[in-house]
Amino acid sequence: MFNKLLTGLLCTALLLPAAATADEVNVYSARKEKLIKPLLDQFTAATGIKVNLLTGKADALLKKLELEGENTPADLLITTDAGRLHRAQQAGVLQPVDSATLMAHIPLNMRDPEHYWFGLTYRARPIMYVKARVSPDELSTYEALTDETWKGRICIRSSSNIYNQSLVASMLASQSAEQTQDWANGLVQNFARPPKGGDRDQIKAAAAGQCDIAIANSYYYAAMLAGSDEAQRASAEKLAIFWPNQGADARGTHINISGAAVTKAAKHKDNAIKLLEYMTQDEAQRWYSDVNGEYPVKVGVAANELLQSWGEFKADTLNLSELGTHNAEALRIMDKAGWR
Ligand code: FE
Image 1 (cartoon, rainbow, N blue to C red):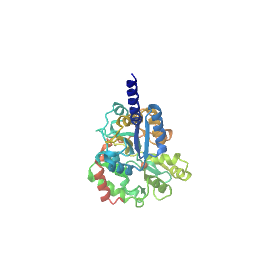
Image 2 (cartoon, rainbow, N blue to C red; image 1 turned 180 degrees about the vertical axis):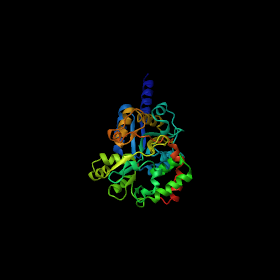
Image 3 (tube, rainbow, N blue to C red; image 1 turned 135 degrees about the horizontal axis):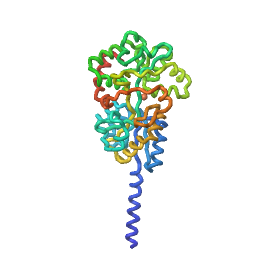
Image 4 (cartoon, protein in one colour; image 1 turned 180 degrees about the horizontal axis):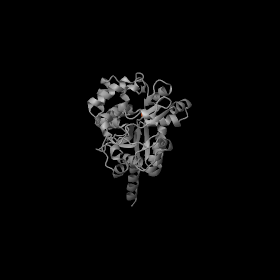
């Protein structure tokens, strides 16, 4: 009797630490802590699963995952841009996930066809124009920005950034390489200045009179308008969004995602999937898209009021995995066009 009791106690004692460490999940996030931590805390409160968070720059985190290989502590990678998630998949650091919840909550074009990664929010990369110098009537498509009327009037960042690589990749998915090369050549001819800075810097340069058109991701514009920096708000207020490629036969405005993927070496795979699924629930979708100035992927969940005020638009329905498959060619084309 005593022996049985002792054995029972020992077993419990031996099992406890294992059970405690099993109820956690390790996350590498390219999203800044304040833009994700409250959501992770809610997940912990709802499930009892502790989340260990490491934040860093997107490209550095991917490199870290590759270097750590099987020894990585990371279970879930949260990052931005489908092009980058495709790179992670190609690097062999992700594993596919079978989840009916994710299939139901995330539109087909915003997740990997082989289930290696999943979109959590989306952002658009529209044309932004200086209201005092450009009428929206003059604008139509990305393609039309190569017209001579735009010579010396366009600001856009360098080709080394994945956002532009993905924009060019989206064009490659809808037209030939020759057409895309012509477009890139023409766009570069119309640059107001050699590319420099990030997306916000293009908006600031346009507001300051260095160009009349900026191409930038929608959440930067939202952050500038809604943020506490008066100068940035004043800059952004001089511009308006134009949704390109909206005609009946047009493919729609280029969009991209922020997303997540379970790592190949995940030691807490089930918990990582639970967290992914949690992030696609209505309330999580609302909070996460709102705080990041992005659109929720889940159909039926409304974007915040500021984004709604820009009006509805037709988004390109291209499967975003194609941004990854066309990435190398997009880079070659931009390079050949002299897009620095
Ligand atoms: Fe960004």
